[in-house]
Image (cartoon, rainbow, N blue to C red; front, side, top):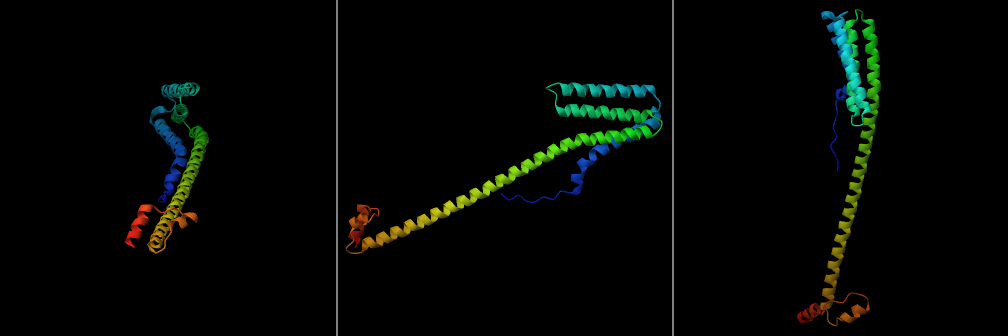
Length: 201
C-alpha cells in the first residue's frame, strides 16, 4: 500500500528535453564533416540527399494518409526526411550561415513536435498518478472497514462468551427457572444442557 520513494537524477529528466537539439546538432556536425571531405558543391551527393529526403517524406505522407499506418511511423519518416535535407544542405553549402539557419529551423520544429508528445505523456502520467492515489485511498478505507468489522466481531464473541458464562453460572444456582428467561425475552437454553447442570448441582 505504501510504495518506497525513489529519487531520479536530474540528468534523467533533462535527457528527453535535450534530445531534439542533440539530434539536429549531430546532423549539422556530420553534414559539415561531409562537406570538408568532398561534398561541397557536389551535384551527385546533393542529388542523392534530395532523393533520400523526398523518399522519406513520401513514406511519411503515405503512412499518415493510410489508416493502418501509425503516427509513430509517419513522425519517424518526416524526421528522417528533415534530417536528410539538413545534412544535404550542410554538406553542399560552402558557407555556414545557411546550414545554421536550417539547423535553427529544424530544432524549433523538432521542439514544437516533441512538445505535443510531452504534453500527452504528462497528461497520462498525471491521470495514472491520480488513479493510483484513488486506488491507494480505497485500499486504506477498505482496510479500516475490515479492521472495524473484525473488532466488532471480536467484541461480539467476547460478549457471547460472557453471556454464556453468566447463564451457565445462573443455571447452577438453586431455584433457576428457564421459563422465566424466555418470558423476559432472552433465548431459551437447551434442555440437555440445563439437565446436565441440574444433575451436576
